Amino acid sequence: MTRILRDGALLSVVASTYLLVLLRLNPRIFLRHYPKEIREIVPPKSEKERQMSISPAWMRHGNQSLASVLPNAQYRTLEGQTHMLKPKAHAPLLVEFFKG
Image (tube, rainbow, N blue to C red; front, side):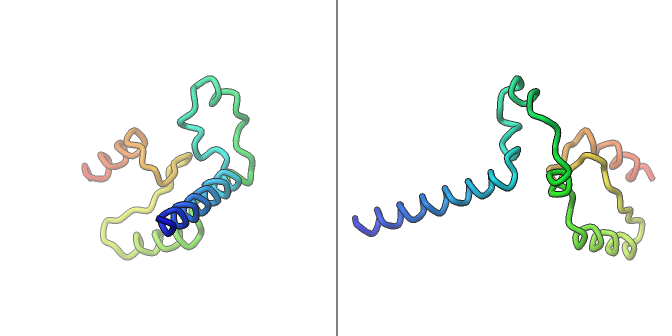
């Protein structure tokens, strides 16, 4: 029983620390779950926040290199998109690609 309490307490501290650091680094991470009234009054992203949302250079360069050696591959960057794929943004490009 003592070990369960100790492990639970340790896990709680680790999880809480992780969430606090995550929120400190990116306070907008849970913003999409807030009511619309709150989302509307949040100021636009700062330059630092915009830089944090851009894929790292190694990832972009790796994908560009891969696209350059694969037949019929294309490398594209969709303005305003993140790694969370949004069908409305990607569907037109996929249709265009597969229609050839």
